[in-house]
Amino acid sequence: MYFAALLARTEDGWEASDTELDDVETLSDLTDLAREASDEDTVLVLIEQEDAWFGVVRVDGEEDPRIYVSDAAAASRSSYGEILLTDELLGREPGDDDADLDSLDLDGTEDGEPESSDDEEDENEAGDAVSHSPVGDRDILADLGVSEKELLALDEGDALSTIADALGAAEVLETVR
Image 1: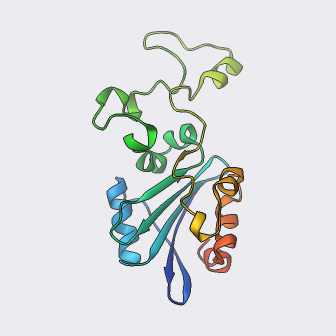
Image 2: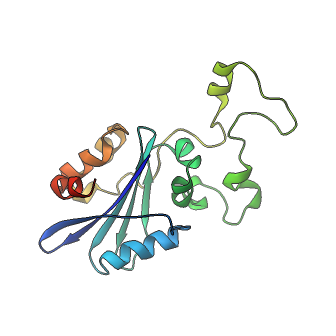
């Protein structure tokens, strides 16, 4: 189950809107969606997948979007996560066809090699190609009241609520949940 919302900072505070990501295929599409909410002010796109990962995309006017993803490996298994996990974010060369997410060895086996029947071994190897570490701009919310340390300490289950609370936007976010 996914949840996605836009938080737009306005002169009157934060405004939240539930957003549908079905038509969003690229980071550029997501950035355009955020800019439609507000061309000049800060817009945050908040995305979460139940207790697995969360992501924050920050769009400030015409600046390039800033991205933070709590668990790159979990997000790489998600269609919405794939939108956020750019080559730059993952430290890959742009256009490196050998490193696209479709070709990553996420199950821990080599091509042509049978999968292990030992579930525990599979769990330990799964996601080795993309780390379970956070990726992106860890200071994405620092000027809004959520430090890098606080961001890294967030639990995936209630991260978006905690972020919204720190921003003073908890009530408006809950109206769109």
